[in-house]
Amino acid sequence: MTQLIQCIREQISRTDAARIVANASGHPTRVEQTLYYPYWWYRFGYSLTTLFGCPLFEIDCLVDGRKGITSTADVFETLKARPFTEDVLEICVDSDSGMSNARHTARHMLTKKYRTIMPFELKTKRNQLLYKKFWIVECGVRGAKVLIDSTTGKFITLTGENDRAAA
Image (cartoon, rainbow, N blue to C red):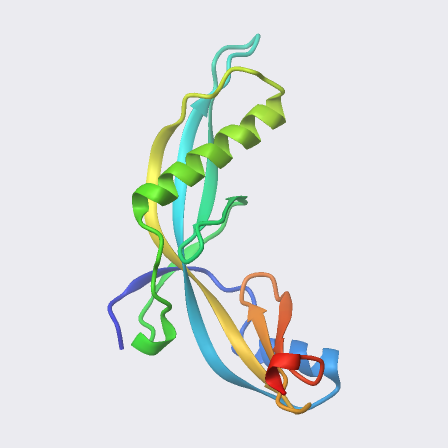
């Protein structure tokens, strides 16, 4: 076991993940591995001057902890988990790089959303390392493996009969 980590609360259980792949493939499945993927979670506060005053708002950004890709995020719940060491992927993006990427994305999204030309003043309210759970599900079709997102249930095929690298 590793130390306690903060995770995005899963919406899809391990059993549901296997069932999703079984329903899509029509073959028996088994969950082969659980992965905890790292993200930097930034929450920025900003204000917007309107006819009714200057209300305060917040925007959340998640930065991929391995590749640095950034996106804004909807509200989500978190929980603490104590996974096995081998299930936790190593973080490759430092907090400062993540913060820079997140600020750029947040400013871009806000400028686009409110159709402004002035950049928003962003105040950092949260800067935290966070993990998201994924499952690798093995399908009974020529060793096909599928990666399932624990929050959305979306999946991608990792290997299988159409994968040249697997041959």
